Image (cartoon, rainbow, N blue to C red; front, side, top):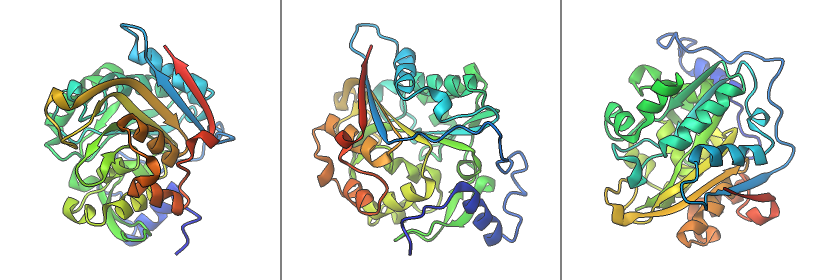
Length: 315
């Protein structure tokens, strides 16, 4: 098993078609295979990590989101005109934004708007929720974001789940949420919070919301599961929402007593570094977190984020 060469999304689609006899996307005709684009966004030339901190009273979350992308060279480094972009927030629970169980809707809206300004053909919001999806979308604020921006909010349903070979160390054939492998670009947009099994749920853990199947089985050997999924989905960029973080009783929470206001965003093209940096907000040593240590071992990135091109922007 070669962990040094992650599958591209196009290779993933080819495997999807082979596994399903060439009819994998027939029941989801609204989706299309990504087509080559002449003006494809250039890959970032180096690994970087950017921390955005809102310090002023009444600072704008929208403006802070824009500033962290500006510090990375702008959204056009990651999204090109004509792209189909899928944003993967964490919307698993029917919780109000102030409870920090879901991605903050103002951060989500800002990222949607940036992608649209870059000329994306379509911007889609997709997550396979735990609570009823319609309630999650309504209560988290994601539904309102879709209404305001015109982004497609994708309801997770059986016709959009396709069995694929993840080629993981633990996970092999597993049902995958199709929009996330069809996209030209995928932006991972998790909320930072406590988790009862993995200690924290950050960027890499959020990919459990990109597949279907038994959550109970996914939670067995959870650190390897996280790494297998993170390697397979391999996002274009990760932006961790730590405006408000859940410090205990995660991942569902439900009490303001478990929430700390950090007014922080972390952007990186290294998913391991992003999670490592976010772990410090919980006073956790990254190298002691099983999924972070294992992800570095399998070559997904580094938890030594200070070795990357690092910047801090303050608003």
